[in-house]
Image (cartoon, helix red, strand yellow):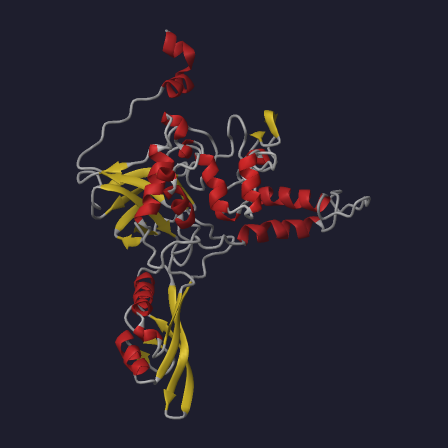
Length: 412
C-alpha cells in the first residue's frame, strides 16, 4: 500500500499493489522472484510485457491467482474439539489488551493488530509480511532481521541449538514467563480451519481400550453437527472370512453408506465383536478456493493502518450486539464463540462494518468470536468482552486527541 517498509524505513515509497485487487500483491512477488532468484545470472530475456525472466503475462496472472488459493496450514496446536485453551485465551488478553509491562508501549496488539497480527503501514520500521501467522516456522524475525545477528551472544547461543522458534520469539518479550501464554495464542490462533479438521481416530478392538479414541470421535461428531467439518469414515465390515470395504458420511445422527446406516453405538458394538474396523476423518467443505477467502474480523479501523489501541466490543444482558470490521463475511455465516457454534444474526452494514448479535449472553469475561463461511473457512479469533452492565467509553489518549484534532484543538 506504499509508505515505509523494512527496506525504506526513512521515507515513503509508492504502492506496489492495488488495495482493491489482491492479485497485484502476489504478482509483485512473482515479478520480483522471476527477475532475481529464478533468473539466470547474466541473461537478459524478457516476456511479452518486457518484464525480466520467464513466464508470459498470462502465466504470471494465473500464478498470482494460484498463490492466493494456496491455504495456510491449520493452526499448529488448536485442540481437536476446537475449543481454545485457557492459556491461549490468556495469550490473547496479554497480547492485545494487557501488554508486557511498560504501559501502552508494551501492548503488542496496538501494532500487531487483528485480523492477522500485523498492520502494513507501521510509522517507523514497516511491516512487510501480510500476516503474523506461521511465526512458529520462522527463525528470521523482525523487520531487517535485526535480532538475528551471530555477533549477538544470545542469538549465537540459540544458533548452536538450531534456533528453536519459541525461544527466539521469547527474546522479543524479554523472556518474561508471565507473557509466555502468547505463544499458545500463536499456535492456536485460527488460520481458517476448525481444530477438528484433518483429525483422525481409528476404531478397532485395541484402540477402543483407550478413552481418547471415542473422545476424538465425539469431538468430530460435534464439529460435524455444527458444519465446521464433514465427517467421513473409511473401513471394512468383517463377516467370518469375508470383508467388505465401506465408506460412510455422518449426517448429524447416523453414519450412512450406499447400502446401510449405523449409529456410533452400533459401530462400536461391531468393533468390539471384531466385525468392523474404520478410520474417522474430519474433512473440509468445498468453499475454500480463491473465490471464498477466509473471513477477517478486526476492530473498527482501516485494516492496514496503525490506529492506536484496539477497542474491543463489550456486550451485556441489555445489549447482545457488537459492531466490528469484517471482510469476506456473508450474512448467513455461522457464528462461533469459544470454538462452539451459537445462535445469532449478522447484519452487513457499510465500509466493511458488520453487526453481530448473539441470541444468548455468554458468561462474564473475555471471549473469542469467529464467523464461518458456509461450507468454507472460519475467520480469525476476535476478542469481545461480556460485562454485567454497560462499560463507559475509554477516555482518548493524548496521541489520539492530537491525531484527530491537531495541536490547535488541544492548545486552543
